Every structure is written in structure tokens, then in C-alpha cells.
Length: 124
Length: 102
Image 1: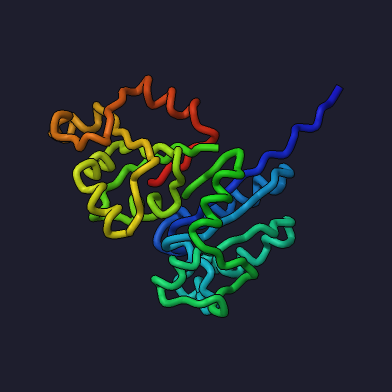
Image 2: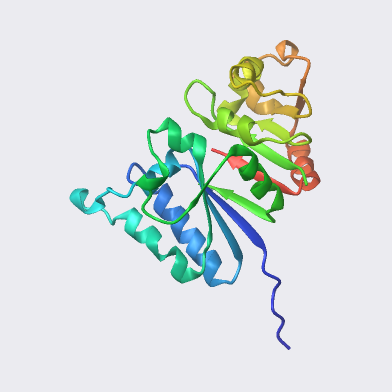
């Protein structure tokens, strides 16, 4: 007899810049793995994590895979719940139209609610 | 639906405490661990700078990490309580989810 596990609401908060460490890439791997296993995924970019979304990034110049392009696969994994912290964007001189992917810019209160609604929260 | 937030770096070298305080909700617990224990003395000041209130938040610090760094339990502000590793596990169980700021 097989049973289908109940999907859980997994919320990921990505807080680090794209090329300074392996954290951003590792977070994307975690997010995609969760989606493959049919979990309900919410992805939030805050603090330096918003820098991953810069549409003019060109990782290839430094021999790295372009993270902005890699994030473009999120819709293919049916990950629609993507949020960006407005305050973090503003602090880094970025605006909504600087973003490489479709994402909802939201305030702190919204992120607090997303955390409260999660079954588990991962930060990296 | 309360959340346990752990913080492991001081506010003068990272944004962890500020980001956490911005998202913490009444009923949540802040647990200072590792180098995050240095925040014990400056927590109120940082909160005031952000115009957020610590009221409604339960703030605790992991005793071993505090003592290891030469910080005295007796000098902690009244609103901060110390816990041991068993207390840490209890906090994890008492909250719906944990957010680790590291």
C-alpha cells in the first residue's frame, strides 16, 4: 500500500548576494528540490538576497553561472509564490523594474504573515 | 502560530538582528546564541533605532554561549532570561516554526 504524503507549506528566505558565496545557489537548489517533491513552496528574497534578482547581472563574466537566469526556471517548477522585501530593495537602490523575474514586492507585515503560515521556514 | 527566532551574530557586524526584529510578531521568542549573545546589552537600543517594540516578545539567551564570552548573567537587562540546551529544545517544541538568522 502506498500513501501520498500531505504537501507541506515550505517557506524559503534567501538573504545573501548571488556571487559572494555559495549560499544563493544552494538555496535555489533546495527550493527546486522541494518543488520536485510536490511541496508548497514560497520563496522570499530579503536583505542582500534581493541582489540575486538584478536583471543586468552577468555571472559569466567571472566564470559563474548566471543566477538571475537560473531563477528563471522557477515558473517551470510551478513556483508562483515569489516575494521581494520592499525595504531591502530600497536600501540597495533597486526598484521593481530592476528585477530579472516576476516577483511580488511586499512589506514586512506580509513577510511576517508568510512565516506564520509556513509549516517550516528555511533561511540561507 | 508563534515563531522561534535564533540569532547568532552581533548587530554591529550583521543585519540579522534588525531583519529579525522587523519581522518578529507579538508572542514570538528571540533566542540569542553564539556571537548573537553580544546583542543582549544593545537589543533595546537597536529596537529603539528601528522604532519597533520589544513588548510582547520573549527574549532569551543561551547561558553557555553567554558565559563563554565573558558576559555576566547578572548584568543582563531584566527582560532577558537565560536558558540551557534543554530549554532550547523546549522552545523549538513550543513554537510552530523556527527561523534561524545566521
